[in-house]
Length: 314
Image 1 (cartoon, rainbow, N blue to C red):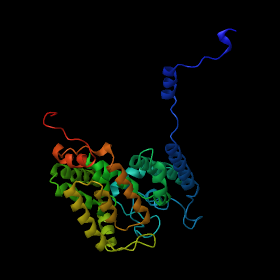
Image 2 (cartoon, rainbow, N blue to C red):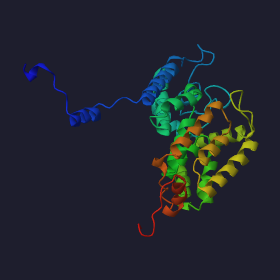
Image 3 (cartoon, rainbow, N blue to C red):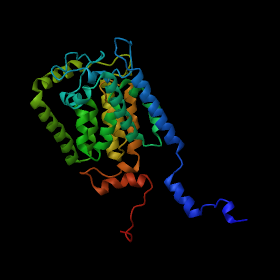
Image 4 (tube, rainbow, N blue to C red):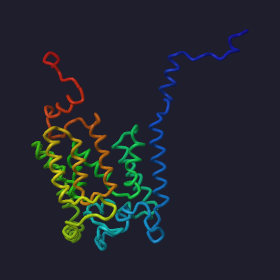
């Protein structure tokens, strides 16, 4: 019988080529993508206006969609829905997105938050991240974006401007640069913040005065039932001590933890900032910031078991 009667078996090399071209799907990655998609659908589907739902999803995101550039602080009571209490600069950045209808805005905003979550956890831990960050995804606040800015701030200190121009008090993490003598990084962070302020104030000078008044009025107030009942004056010294200890021991993960502790009100969704620890303990952020030195990075590398070069090897 001719050999053509039987299908030929691919050679091992060809089978390996097929495997590279069509890799098996990773179960954890697939689960994370499906959970992220499900969370996105839930938030978008339930984000009806407050007139129809007593407390719909994306209630915090509504405070970025509803204010106007003409009078952003018309409803600046931070314990009520739709109140805007961040700087004018943040509202100016979000303004083009806020031109969308509410449902479309929620879809885009939730997608941004899921992108931030993927940045923090990576693909393999995305499912765990979605579960832990679900309150934040449902509320639509900026805690995940704060975590991203803090992680990125070790490499690009200008990212700290986002922290200082929104929640403000998590900027306690900048003590890391001061305590370690990384003055260039600190100057970049503060300089970028001041530059954004100047650019924004050209177009909205009065709004910046209003924002300072809002911050003054909000000082000393605590959160609502949706926040952990620990006063800010108690949490702030703990945050400072944690950053100081982390800076001395070169433990970067302490910075996002301290920033979370120093939130103006420790909402339950703010706990999602802890996901920054995953990103900071990974290899991709092991490089020093522009102002850092290679010598300062060696303790963290030794802690991971990375061999230091010997005299012969050097």
